[in-house]
Image (cartoon, rainbow, N blue to C red):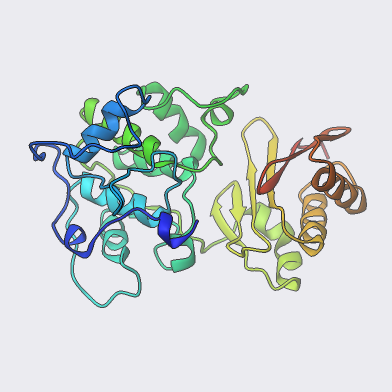
Length: 317
C-alpha cells in the first residue's frame, strides 16, 4: 500500500479526542465513490457522521482500500473512547497503540512501526474485537464469537468458520465501518477486556521452534503470533503460517524470489507437509509460472495475485 492510499487523518483530527457513539456530526459530507446502492452505504455514512472515520483529501472514501493496522488501532481507540497521552512518538498512531495496551490489548505493531504500516488481517481484527468484550483469547474462539453475535456472515466458502470468515484476508475500509456499526448496534460500546491479550511478535510456540533455525540462517526474523501461528515482516520473505483446529495447516508465501520459495519449501517440510522440500519447491515454481493450482497428494498449492497459499492436513506420526 502506498502512502497516498492511507486513511486520511489530519493532525487536527488526530488530536480531537476519542470517538463517542452518542456525539455525531449533524450532517454527512457524502462520498462520490459511495452511492446509496453500495452494500455498505449505511455503515459508511454512520462512520462518517459519527466522526469515527474520515475520507481522503480528494473527498472520496475508498471503501475497497485495505487498512493498515495503525489505522484500525486509531479507529478502535476512538470508538471505545480510550484515553491517550501526548509524548514523543516515532509513529503517529503510537498514542492509540499505547491506549489499547493500557487497556490490556497489545496489538502486533505496538513496538514495530513496519507492522503498524502493514495491512491488517481480518483474523487480528476478530481477536481485537472479541477481546474488547471480555471474550476468551484464541483465533477460533474469536471468530466463533463474531458469528454468534452476528458481527460477521463470512466472506467466502469453507468447511469451518475460520475458513468462511477468511482470517488471513485483509480488512477494507468498508468492512471496518460495517464491523463497528454492528458492534455499536449490538450495544458493545463499553470496553470489557480484563485479561491481557498480547499479540506482539515476541515469544515462541511449537511451530516457530521447528523452523526458527531455517529462518535465522536466511537472516529473517520470525514472530510467534499466538500458540498456533507465526509470521514474518520481511517484504521479500513474507510468510504466514496457521495451524487450525482439526489438523488443517495453512502456509501463505509471498510471490517474490526463488530464494523465498527455497526457504518456504524447507520450512514447510519441517512443519510436517507430506512432501520433500525439493518437491514443494518445484510445485511452488510451477504455480508461480502457470497461475494454476497444484495438487500434490495431500498438499494444495494455490497461487493468488501477491502470494501463494499452501494447504495440507497434519500427518500422523
